[in-house]
Amino acid sequence: MRLALNDRLFVLTGAGISAESGLATFRGSGGLWNGYRVEDVATPEAWRTDPELVWRFYSMRRRDALAAQPNAGHIAIAEIEQKLADRFYLCTQNVDDLHERAGSQRIHHMHGTLFQSRCVHCNATFPDKALYEAAVKLPKCPKCGALVRPHIVWFGEVPLDMEDIYRELDRTTILLVVGTSGSVYPAAGFVQVANQRGIRTIYVGPEEPLNADAFDEIILGSATEVLPTLTGPDR
Ligand code: OAD
Ligand code: ZN
Image (cartoon, rainbow, N blue to C red; front, side, top):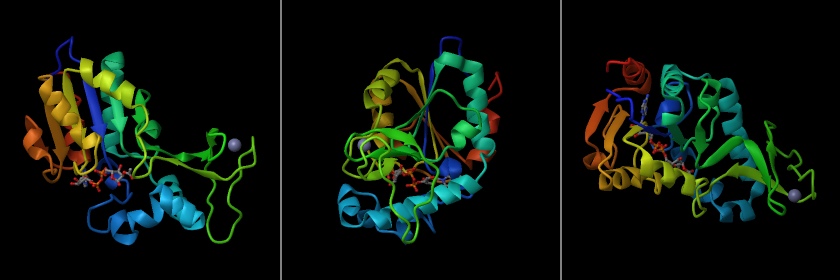
């Protein structure tokens, strides 16, 4: 990926970048959405109907993420950031913290973060690594005592940082998309926005995403195979 001195790189990642760290993707075989129905664990309605089930689901995901380690794909992205500094922007759909643990700093979690919780009443958010599984008391807000939910964007809710994300897409020159099936909007639409602005678009993943036609270049391979090859200055 040849980068000129005035190039700005916008990286979008999905569940695929954490797959080789042992975290399930959503729609692949053995994916999260095979074991659980979205409607039961990832919607505001699910939360109103059965907050314990929702907390069991996200506690399972917290446990898995705590046991996982960043892989060569996460590390390569952190290295590219170091080289490009403020000419770099990372937007992830992932809620795990593997990018941060690999050293990424300029990161935006558009679907929220696993290790934060939020009060349903006063909206206070706070760091939280606790597991709320079978029959334990659900968490209460330290400020107002109301029920606390995972700080995750559920279906039907508005993703975070969207203004900042579109502002950055506006001024980027290269869009690199890694490990996402292109089935969930607005993230799946970033490539179309990039095309309208004549931005170069590259996809990295072992199979073509649903929006493959929109990309200038598709590099088929896993994140740990391909991303380290993109960090060299002359590539
Ligand atoms: P998906 O599970 O839909 O897609 C994962 C993608 O990763 C697939 O396209 C795979 O080809 C690719 N992949 C698998 N292994 C890989 C590897 N080793 N290296 C690189 N790529 C690999 O997950 P997402 O597209 O991230 O949202 O899902 C998007 C959103 O849907 C999630 O953020 C979540 C989910 O429902 C919400 O919950 C709001
Ligand atoms: Zn509160």
